[in-house]
Image (cartoon, rainbow, N blue to C red; front, side, top):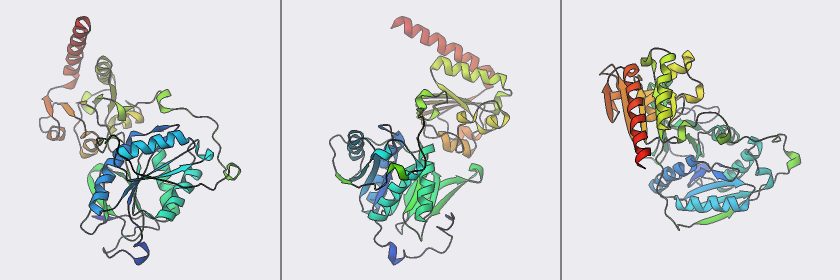
Length: 362
């Protein structure tokens, strides 16, 4: 196990009792990502995990929702209760209409300093990473980023596990001498919990004393992810991906063709990004996108731990590789020892024929 080392917090040392000044830090918090009235799905995934951590610690689970629309905030609070929260801290202010680091950091750090949670979780999205880093720096506490597993150890500390050394090792990190203990987790790494309709809790409204004139940054224009042409791998039900086993950039077109027939997203392993065969937004794995589709087809991918971490949450993993000893066969649900360059066209044709028959029958 390793010790978190972000300066100046979480410096390595022998585990010891929590300093007396932190004895009042209690409860598990999830900072929900709410943008333009929409809650990011990772927030619900974190509430599910946070519920387990809170139960293990015997404390409350609380959600933080921030924005400018009281209606949207109360809708998010209702969802938070149904996904496990006991309490919701609500910050409603016109300056929170758009995400700005300065504003969100002040809102969240004010809440933490006032109510003192022992654990604070955020999604490892673009917004979450930006906010988590500045909040941890402002609070002078430790932050473990891009975690794949969260747990409570025998002494009651947060054990945050994440890959390191390019994904070749897993490291469990503790923030022993600082509070709150902070961690970010990527979307789709954790399972989506089952909501409990009608479940309720307590709402605590907290004022944000910040005027627009005091804020340096201004939002000029907003473009939603759904309106961009970037890959949406994290939310796809079916993903087809290729690796170096495809042998050439031209052969990667076979992956795209199968994805098109299946109505799927397509991606690839890190070496393909390094070779320029695909763009970085289509990289799958610990240093790319973490996915949890219903079906994942991996063609010519060896399945090193860096890639495994990004895909093992899929409901069904189908691996195609010429090497029967490839690591991907250790965690794939269905393995096919074959040349992907030969098999992919056959699969594309078979799926196209089957789907055509189904459409005619329907």
